[in-house]
Image (cartoon, rainbow, N blue to C red):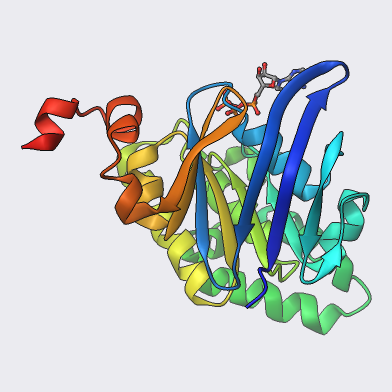
Length: 245
Ligand code: ATP
């Protein structure tokens, strides 16, 4: 089976400053794949390159059998790649419904389609339905994260790229967000998940890549990564001695 997304030997830089090298990864149709690593490891940079916000200096990216290495982000979005960047960027002075409508931009000529997508999002996120006419800026952090997820899903993506969806949220809210990500995936959307919260990421994804200072140092099934000593020491807060018991 060919991968939905395949990145091969990406070299990524900001101007002259290198950020990531030799990034090779793939996401198969229907998978949740995670990128974990410490601050500054290059997770967001990799995600930006996949969504088209940063062009690689070298390497190639293929999506659904097509070379998208030089395709701008809006063209990638039309093909089915949606990016939810870090930081829950809602339009604060637009209502929840208006924020969702903007996510359905590619269906703007089809009002019935947008209505049915919004109904679907309200089914998936009942709290957003209750706040449909409220300005997005008045929502809690967790609700804003739900809104940016819903807004991205309004484009019916085949691949949802999520950057740190749990950042700054309370543990119960984080659980809710990860439950939602799993249910989005069960609905048929593949997910590439960048997370610093390795514990949740490894519970949610089937495979993962661990980045350190711009390179992938280990990759594989999450069940295997959870047993990896480097992952345990650096990200799961467990010492090798305890893990060995
Ligand atoms: P974090 O969780 O802190 O966002 P990360 O793993 O996502 O970390 P990146 O944000 O991808 O890491 O950063 C990778 C490297 O690229 C770091 O050295 C960082 O300083 C650098 N970098 C990130 N964004 C920029 C930018 N806009 N301009 C210049 N350098 C950048």
